[in-house]
Image 1 (cartoon, one colour):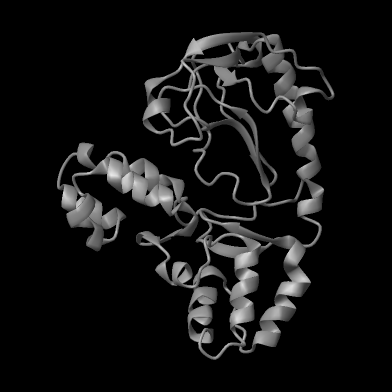
Image 2 (cartoon, one colour):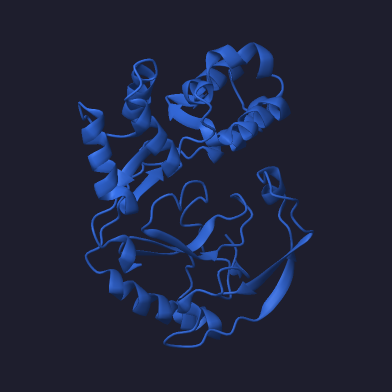
Amino acid sequence: MENAAHAESLDHEVYRTPLVVRPEFEYRKTPGNYRNRYFGPGKLPDKIKVWRVQNTQKGNVVARSYGFLDSPDTEIIAVGFNHGKEYGAIGIGRQGNFLQWGYGDTPAQMTEAGRNLFINCIHYIRRFEGKLPLVRRRTSDRHNALSLASIITRVIGDKREFFTRTFPEELWDKYHADPEGLTAHYKANLELVYRDNVYRIDDELKALGIDSNRRLDTLERLIAMLDNETEAPTARLLLARYTDGSFETSQQWRQWLDENKERIYFTDVGGYKFQVAPEGYIASK
């Protein structure tokens, strides 16, 4: 990561209180690595609007963009300008009560805006004392399937071995020499991707006419299907795939949903599961 942040997220309160952060903007050429790993929407501009946080290049991306926001205890404070990771990789972020600061200069080497932001971030993180992160990384986000699909012909070594450790073996013949086709295949079905050793597309959900595995209404529909003798076996299979619940009856499933509906979220990196935040946790943000 370089010494700058994208001119995004500036509406966050850490740019206003207790000190006012006044970034000085400039435009830098869009890095090639951004274009290689950008899948929309639209196209990236030729130059990116940024502001300098510090004076040297001593910094690092603290987290990939893939899956960072898939739990309610995370937020992006600054997108880091970088020449190694994808567009959107995080330069400053928060997970639970952890402040993730990716810039390595001392305050004396920061810009005035950088120093003020650093102080504000320390002030801000104080309110999350005791709020441990909800999700521990167990796997990779679905967008990583797009990134890996786009480079399958550039992987060094045994491509078949790499392919079948990442994608289902039945896709080898059709896509092993066609990164654009494989990327398009996963992009078209992105809302149905899950990871079970490899990145799969959920054909069981698709057969039910459900077009996303991570929306709350999907969970509601699966629970409703438990009362249908024909659909119940598939619904139970999918509920086992996407939750840690082990209820015996549809009534128990509905009670669990009704009691926790406002606190349910879906996490890719946490295992492609619907999970329940503790009471009061989401409201504390």
